[in-house]
Length: 173
Image (tube, rainbow, N blue to C red; front, side):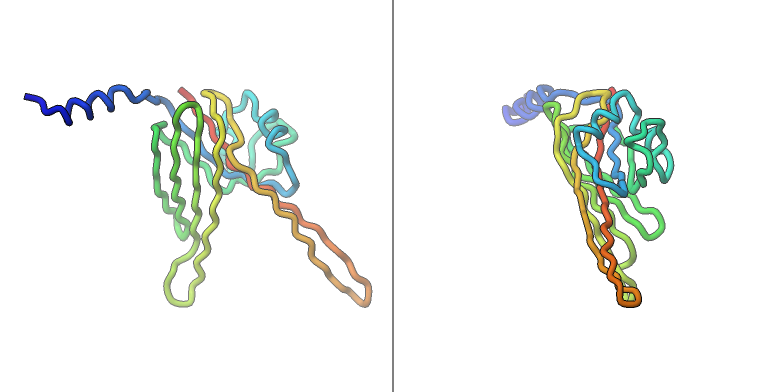
């Protein structure tokens, strides 16, 4: 005899929409300011896995050239996903959810060892956005502009440095 609680649990599990396929999440940094709309337009029709298959973005799309691939991972798509990857002194933790055509993801990159005199740094990249199957999509974007002054022999120079960090996801079913 099946208990009512077990029946309710089975009905709940079978009513969840199945997600199949591969989910690729990546973090790319650009040395100039970018907009999410222009990035989404440039990503149209591209494979995120192929774009991030090197330490630099691999593409003919001029708007995406010059990007530095900080992190990229492909995993089986599921409603809730979590993975931890470690390579040498870098650890990447990916946590997120994929439900109702929407993705939410947090990628934490930790470098170094938290022991003794060695330094330990942590960078967090996150975002949420609608995600259709097949189309790479900007999930999160962070723009940083830094101005530094430099004085050489009495003359001052102000230098501006831009950094654009972008979280991109693609679901392939």
